[in-house]
Image 1 (tube, rainbow, N blue to C red):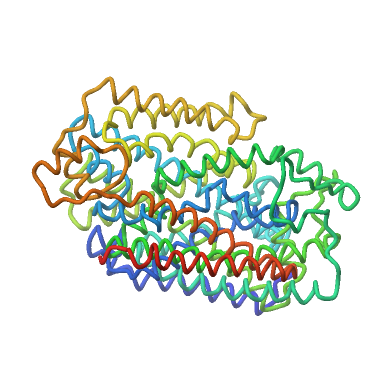
Image 2: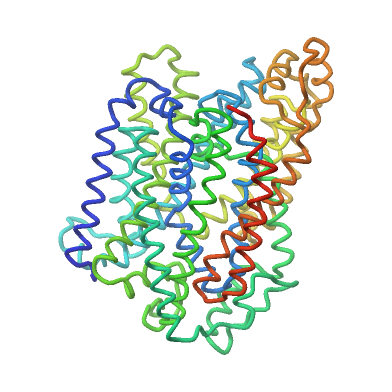
Length: 609
């Protein structure tokens, strides 16, 4: 165990600070349901943006991104499009404004805005609650495993085992550590609600940003004295039909990992990933912490600004750290000792092993705190979202609609404990970070897309169609991993999409449309563009001054330029760390042009409130 006294002090100080935040925000959070779930809609957009960035800077995702950059180099910038990272562009371009105009507390409550509150509408409400809880549990298990793998390297179980009254199998040691540190996130999340989460996230993101800068500088200083030995094309962002990376003469075992990832031929994988990403982004945010923070903003304008700010604060810092650790791992790979007794390498341990090897005393504690806080931020935001759905959309809608303040507070605490226990149980059955990630983004989210694209853009989609599309998509997403265990989930995403889209369309056309009053109110309040012509005519027959949304071309151009800007701001710190200064300058130039365009075509045209 390499932790020194200063490292332990920094870690304990951090844990104590977040416990205090939970205690200090407890009273305000208990004031009302809105204060607990949404901070009373009084949190400034920049704070929500930093909080969201902190939640997205998760430890499991960072572990994965370091492992793929080690293997695929600069081309790994494209792989997070699996999530997809550019959904934040669609949000700040127009969707955050649409979502915030609904004035609801959760994504499930939004269903009543779109489909009304009749008997049929409750099906759409039920299915989105089920999906929200399933995705929250998946993300909690995903973060839970990553945290355990991270801590295991710094605190070997052999140093802990003599003090425990029970034994733990080696395969469950990461899960054991995950449980221990999960308890701290549970404490401040359950006590303080959204306000606690946001304040803790700001503290945590400040620490992470400092850690990112230090690691980037350290990597540059080491690379200045040595040469980076990587395959030809590793430093190139672009690709052809295949990635054309061959590690055979450098580290032959990496080629085996590339074959096991099934990303080749990459042009086909990229096309599927990009198509799925576009559809996922048009569908809007999944009902998780991202949506909850948008709904917690003061107004539609601030919702858009907070989504934009996520990209500015998150991507440069995160890629400084990722590229920094990747460079150090490549330069000193032999020192990391990642192979097991059989010679198999766990690439997901590159990040924690590099921290252990290269971080000096004091900085090691700061880095552990930075990545611990990344886990805390993700876990807390996701847990808060799950609580919101259980309390607001299950307890208050179906069990006890007239619950008093103390009953609601108690339910908030109990629901949080229930979700944590269930996510831990799920995490015990998960093999590794990548397997959970692939299932969430490749399969489960595939079932979300069709119904949620149509809900914004097609007036004829009704609650029955939405329910049919979501149910068939979720069932397919849960069955296909068992039917096709050796296939990457992204490859059967098109089949899931076709099944759910056909179900949504047929379910809508074979049943009566949503009530006209509901559709008219939704159309006037949210003002989406798409296939709304019958409703548009109906609105204008009574509201002659009503202006339809004619921003499709503007929104589309902002999305295109936004994705270019997001890619440039991601790759810029990578090129700086690996000393590709010509490409860094080109990235900065493209980013500058994109910023000017977005300032004129997006920022200056945002709604006033």
